[in-house]
Image (cartoon, rainbow, N blue to C red; front, side, top):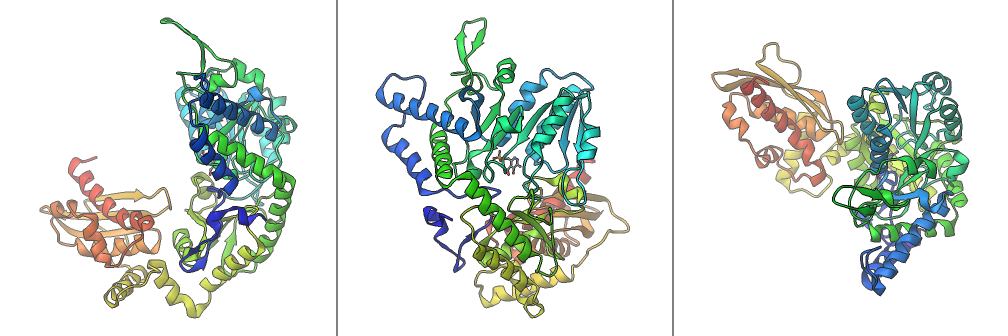
Length: 541
Ligand code: PLP
């Protein structure tokens, strides 16, 4: 639907037509949004609320109009829509401002499927104020266990904060029901709607949530702009988050009073271009119709569930039926690291995401370090799903195995000498040297790449300042594992001082092939682990 509005989609990646399936991370921008932002910069760029000249007046009108458009889009009042930098800032604002009224022993209820941005601010608050965090568990069908929720949300609960659509599982949570549960116990309901607002018609009054946050960039808008909705009577009572210009009514040397809503929560020069872009995105979505977008999402979901279930050796996460589920599909390819799957799909022109998707606790709960995620938006088609399924099926044709493994390492054209290096990397991956715990070691040190879940533990034994033995354990992609193997071989009998000064270039030269910028971290993880291990040994920390 409307693919022609997205100039970026009309390009080839690795010689193939780009198929963009990373929409949960960020969506593409239609030319209507790009043009609206360009118009602002080309014709009326000025600061808002401060000038009386024509450009500033035009910018102010456009900025305030953007609030009106967004308010109407989610069924809120003008004063109830605050522009933030995104979902993350919205949740931090809420943790800060609502946290002020909480007392030791109060409880905050989250769910096990939350994004880090709906966990970490609450953890910090809980530590600071001695609060208790409780989590609504998942059922075997990857839905929230509402019976457990009814027990976990008690009179001690002050805040319930849940995602409306999981960015990993695609599960759509029953927000109205949770609002009922929370309100019956005197708690507030906060909704992380980062993934829901792009896909579903949202009416905050219908949901009866107290607060709702989302990001512009996930619904065809620009990055750096997001929305916090809050019930007016609650926002009025809350302390502002940031302070400075624009959020005040009056300032003396002694004290200040706060501006009216929504400006009370918008300190400093706002993201004017972002707001204009967001309004253009909302208007663009409204011309398509949110019901139509939701309908298209449901159709793609049904089709993807049917097709992906035919791929051997993949395990799909998330509800198996299309009911109450969005078009976000995370999956595990047996015996392959998500990073490697992502790179292989990229070589077919298919953009997906590999890693924990900012939901480490959920992945740990499922016993996984990460997953591969294909997430769809209305400009995706059934053909895109067919291409994904075909690429995944190809991964598992036995006769392709060697080629695939070799492509995981590098899919670009290599010289004859580099091809030999590539064989060597593959050999180190399949037959790692020095893998396993050392019986005797001086120090062990672990490093972890939070982006993709690569995990390396190094065991080092020293003798007179020399590394007399080194080994590693852990799991990760082909590059991180092969580098750990190559490196442990390379540093045997090397003075620790020399190992400490090994550079990234030296490690890359062990591999002998070009490594893409996104994979450099995979290669450098074993080096960092060894060098930090030596430091740990030297300092005794
Ligand atoms: N919550 C959910 C469910 C998300 O999917 C995301 C982004 O992926 C966020 C919060 C954070 O959004 P942002 O990074 O735009 O602040």
